[in-house]
Image (cartoon, rainbow, N blue to C red; front, side):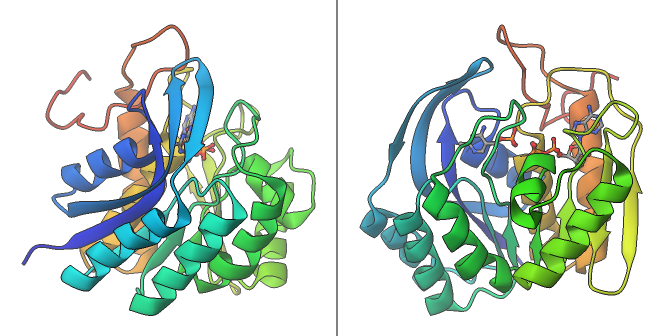
Length: 267
Ligand SMILES: Nc1ncnc2c1ncn2[C@@H]1O[C@H](COP(=O)(O)OP(=O)(O)O)[C@@H](O)[C@H]1O
Ligand SMILES: Cc1ncc(COP(=O)(O)O)c(N)n1
């Protein structure tokens, strides 16, 4: 049987993050990838130069076209840009009652640049995070969502608990790519009862563009393949680590991870 995943996210013209990273990740997992584009970014390995939103009705129409024709096994959200898009996405998601939802609360890039409007943060918190099976903030997003400052692993744990308790997230996975060297690669899971550590040795590279999108897309793909949530996260962490080890040294800035490493193996 063909498993189907849907990504609701922005386009990265450089092909390393956003919808492009998600569809490559779905493809590598042999899951049929569908997409609803929220915005188009003019972006490369050096950064974002321009962003243009899709209309809310077009975002909703894409989700409804997919949802009304296919049995969608899992959904992920990425860059949603502004409040009206978040409201539209929440409405369309509710209409189809998609059960396995991964919310990657894309707000701030690894470089610390804010990617969505201020009012959008409040709506994301209210409308999407409580519906998600798992929410996957990076260090900076976890600081915004928890109101805490994060430098140490202890503080990552406190933020994960705060996001769970304050925002009604079912499971929180705080990603550690933006942590200091000694902790980079360590992610923290909190499900209301247990704090779990997913740790990989830090990989020495600046070619990390798209790691967050890739991790959440891999979780989504594994959920579509009917793995349970914890197994989906463990497998996704393994996938993003291997993709990162096989980064693509392209562009003048931070290159993307190598999504197709099993097909084009470098190490
Ligand atoms: N240099 C690195 N070495 C090992 N793992 C990394 C590195 N950078 C990111 N990761 C991992 O990649 C995943 C995505 O995290 P992160 O880069 O923090 O997300 P985002 O791209 O949303 O900022 C996490 O599992 C994180 O631990
Ligand atoms: C369109 C789009 N969506 C998401 C990201 C975040 O990317 P990352 O996975 O590196 O945090 C991005 N840079 N562009």
